[in-house]
Amino acid sequence: MTAFERPDPFVSILNSPPASAVAINVPAIAQSKHSSCNPEGVGIVGNQWRFKLPNAVGAGNCLVLFITHPWSASRVVTITDDRGNAWPSSPSATANPGGAGYQSSCYILPNAAAGVTTITVTIDTVSNISSINQLANTVTVNATGHGLARGQTAIIAGVPVNAYNGAWVVTGVITADSFQYDNPPGGLQASSGGNAMLGVIPFQYSLFEAYNVALAAPLNGSSVSVGQRGPNLSTGSFTPGANDSAGGNLILSYFGLGQIANTNVTTWLAGAKFILVDGDISWTNSQGFPHASQQYLQPTAAAVNPSMVSSGDSGNFYNGISIALRGAPGIGTPPPAGIRINKVISLTTNRPPASWRVQFPCSGNLLVCAANEPNVCNITRISDTMGNAWVVQSLDSATPQIWYATGSSSGTALVMTVSIQGAPQHVTLVLYDISGAAANAFGASAGLTAQNVSGLTQLQHCPDITPTQINGLVIARSVIGIGPVFDSPSPAGAIDDFVRYANQGISGIDLMDNADGASHFYNLGNRALENWTWTFPANPSDAIGAEAIFFMGR
Image (cartoon, rainbow, N blue to C red):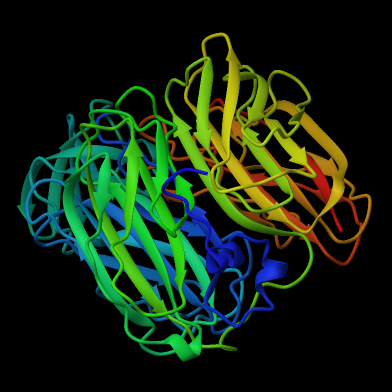
């Protein structure tokens, strides 16, 4: 425990597995998900990012989305989902630099509809392409109200003639409904369909679901900071509205990079009375996107100045947002009993060191780390500061590595050390914090070595796995040469753990999720064989391999 992590009886409630928190009528986090990022200068542009929480959203619960993206005076952010929720058109709080740099915002959706929810974030205009054609090396795109300017990067996606698709610098704007770019491969057939949109970099998100939160006007105070230099960060003091008799206020803080990185963070430290939710220190070459979040249940309204320390960082500038959610006992839906993913964290870097430290704040009794295949990153050992014993399943050097620690000790200060042999390439770790698992949770594993899928759009039986009991969880990871992997239509009900976006896997290396696949499936009522199927675009030359593990619930 550090000086910045003081014990607090209310904090301990939030740091317990969901089953412990359900009995307390105070606002609390049901689940969360935290992305990596395509950093400016090394990643690829994107737009229309689509992602899900690891579990179905509970009816009447509150969703809180923090995002960071480039600032623009004319920026329009649109958030939608597939459950019919009406997301606000304006953020509840925003850290706006008012000039060059990145903008961070918080969007709050109370009284969410129940069910597995896919959220889509779109920046600026997405226009339909009525026609696209090439003369010599110049491509002309007709797309009504495209909103693009000369020198910006345009993403072309979904055009049937695939060579048009990708990210291209706009060389000329003919009218408000047409623009041009250069594409060296000549002789492309005229086509139509698909979309044109702005290519955006960077983009990062942290998504929370909370229960026992007011159905209307849940925001009960906020503070923001812009362009604050590390390591000592704060959003500024504010006093949440009085709500002592209704469970108090749940305070969430988010800190995201405010401009391109120029140094590294070695450790994120939560502020007094707060507990760390996530802290990205995965980048070690001063090119990444460090970010972090924390939470605190304030039982009695009083002035609070949420702060964090980005230890080891003396050159980065950050935006910070803190919000207070107004508690409302008995409102919404607490997490159900049984095995359950509390949190998913994605961490990516383009060149990890031989001894790679990553933070993994957690509260469950089963910890899982799904990684690339050994051919890309040969992980020889994982250890952590809680002394857990990590074990790996991987069929061969071409299939993903799924490491796990069963019957694990957890804590918000847990740090993993990933030992790597050889010269690794860009790597994505998917960290799962799981509660309600059996003391010895491993049940079964299966893998499929890399298969040639050139020209194909899906691969079934990748792999097949049979659960050893009902009440369990399968975590599956796939790796593909080009991709991107879209989703897992089988088993029906599998939940995708990666973010999907326009231009992913087309014009360069995806540094959010490597354009690979990660998914999970709860088998709460049967032990039937699961045929894991992955879908992807038809590339001229591609291969995919996968690994899956079944973990038993209590």
